[in-house]
Image (cartoon, rainbow, N blue to C red; front, side, top):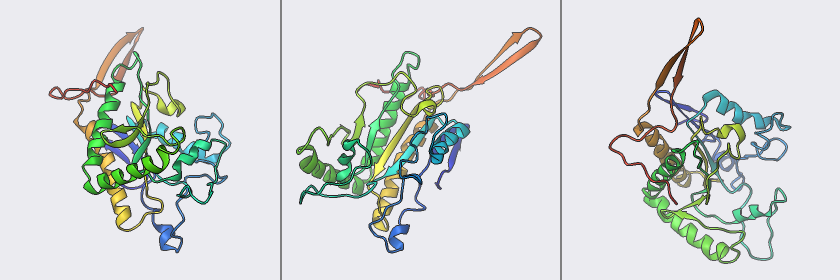
Length: 282
């Protein structure tokens, strides 16, 4: 996979971005403690204001343009962290905070590979979305746990995070596991478009997610491990799409002296007949 490469699977659309090309370059240039930037030219997140009709930050238009171009079934945004630095809670040190949201200090410590949020649609208008999302989550955790080195790293990182962060301040540092993988799953699903505005349109994109890997700055063997973990997550999503049963619905309707032809592919796709769909319960 290359940076920003769309994957066409017999008409299916998957979009991934933020790949590997820039990772490791700061270290090779003599900046071993520098990280690649997710921030725009004015120091805010590159997606800040992305749902605005007229965003004030030019970078905010990039992600909506990608979504409108490919109309993906699933939108994955694989991230790396930390966004600035890892520090220890000693010597009265207080890391800087980019905004007034002090909760961002929960990023102080390394917590392995994790998903900062797992949102899903739970609405009578889209009765199959929740089960599809939890099906994907189960596939992802299976893939992540299937990498022995990453599973061992995760357990060490989770234990350290629990001991020095969660037990210290449960309000700021939280834990939530799914099959031994740190995934912050929403207690209830959403019924609207969600936090990404029209890019979360459930008629088009059945599920979207962000993943976090401790890859800033990573190079050499550590980068290979992080990359293999990210690839395993992508494989889980791709296998879900490939193994599902996609149907194309074609209809025609007479309208005066004209005929209207419609082509529609329901999303999410149905599981194969010999596959039992998960119940989608927490």
